[in-house]
Image (tube, rainbow, N blue to C red):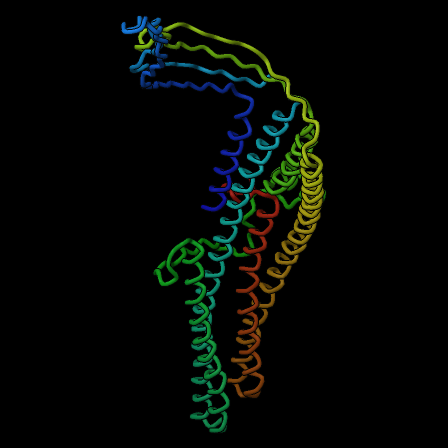
Length: 421
């Protein structure tokens, strides 16, 4: 369940990523710079004029010099840029649709996982109940065999049976005790599985409450059993895994269309507005703005679009194959659960009749044995027949319960209160 929820959250995040290119992009930039420059001075000495002999010559023209102003210069600017995709042939739109389909598919997978968890809990619940009932039945069979021992012992005391018959009668009791120990071990294992299915430590002391109806042949389904065609139609409309597989196919088609638009021209609008300082102290600001559009025409992308298209086509083929597998699986599942449910109901009816007959035969045989008109082997055979009938009936009861849960799971209804909801 936690994994399915995380996959749904991941799919939801992917929808947001797919929508991002279609939304406007707004960014702000602020810069400040302070620079310093050192002054430079360049000069030329003048040429002196020779004076008369004995006199100091006159100085010529003085030299010339140039210098640049030195000091600090500050530059500040603040700019906002807006960018919006105008048209790209529908590539982003297809990517958004693909991500949205995958999001719905993930939600369907989460719901199916919920149904799977409910089915697993129900199966573990009825297995644990059956194991508890089997232990109780095994203990009852031990007592029944002890009653047979007492009956044989009474016949021996009355002189109507040989002492060797007691050993013969004790053998089924020993076998019944072995079966009881095995049933107890099976019960402990079933209870551990039940706790584990609930997400608990296998050593947790948790026992299911038996809600089996007083009439075990009564169905827990509140609606009549559907025909195959009706059940299949219902399963197709209700099962989340069918819808998930269909959504994956739709998303793969959208992804393929998006990949094929890799070389399609895209038109983008952009605009900016800013203020910049224009003096040496960085204190005088002037506004500036721009607006425009850019048309990008891909010419050659090293085969990237072709490779992505081939990849998307392969993913679509995989999705179609998975969808067909899902449909075939649902058809088989519905057919099997219907057959199993009908068979389980018929088997339970048969074991009920078998149990009633076995009880009657044992009672009659016990009466005959007391009267000395039948043999010990026949009495033991009647006891074995009752034991077999009791075991068959117990297994049939919970086979029906499991078949009912499988039926609801196949129709996608087991997460509801009951099939009538």
